[in-house]
Length: 239
Length: 120
Image 1 (tube, rainbow over the protein chains, first blue to last red):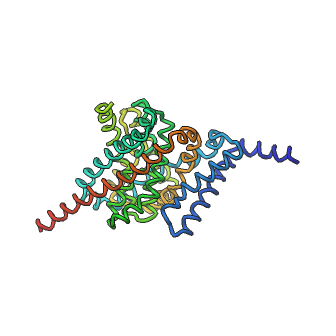
Image 2: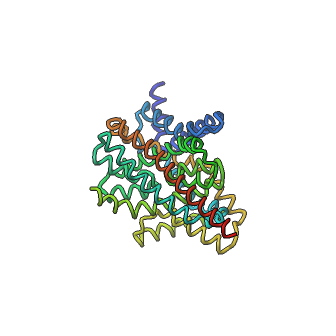
Image 3: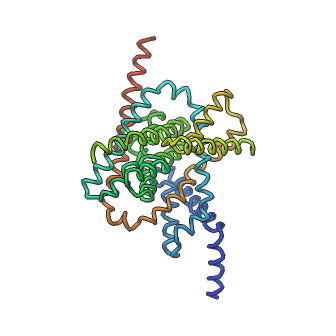
């Protein structure tokens, strides 16, 4: 019996179907909990899904690469989804045009704050040089952040993880901070979330309001550009 | 609908090509987003079928980050070793970034609004 079970397991884990299905199931469990909790940002569905899947992979002693073989079909759709962010942006373009100077200035301020505060705090608590470099571009969307990290001598794969954790942190804690600060303007909320926590923040912003989603997607794109240009220059000043 | 899915993929593909060819530090999909925006501006509106396809991607945007998120397991050991520094840096810096961005945005939009009302 046990041998048969093992055979089935070996067969299933060799096909992308299992990882793909598990990813969808874990996310839907996460989303169900998130919805039941009245869309409480702390119960971010990505966070719940990641915790469930990582636990499952560790318990079954499955390699990430085996899981990703199947999950890559979901991962692939990030590209077209990013292109589709043109839709909310187009719908809110008038609003974006009107506040273009405020957008650029706050984005630059946020972009520098993200890198300097992350490196500063981590250095204060004794993080290694490698971690500091990998941490610096963490507020930028993953492909760009990995490129910057590599250029500065960090670990791109560690940066990818820190980028995701930053996204989840911003999506989970950002709305609470903005509520505490009394910020009601959806454009300003979206811009701040997108600058700090890229696509994962944008996903959360879109769930709340299209205006916030449009500004968040815009901030994500602009912050990628700003950080890629500014961070290597700032880094040279300090190190 | 298949047509607009093709349009979206083509925007991404051209974006990737521009990234590779120019060496610009912008990911291909972000350039693809700008291309699609330019197309919408030229066309002067969003075709209904494009909205259907695009909004389907965006409604489930969070899901698409899950596979990359599971990659956290690759660095669990390192994150455990420097856990305190990393956790504090991520939380502190993310909150600081949000606060600074929103404060600057509000100050400048307020002064712009004030200038507008003065001009009126």
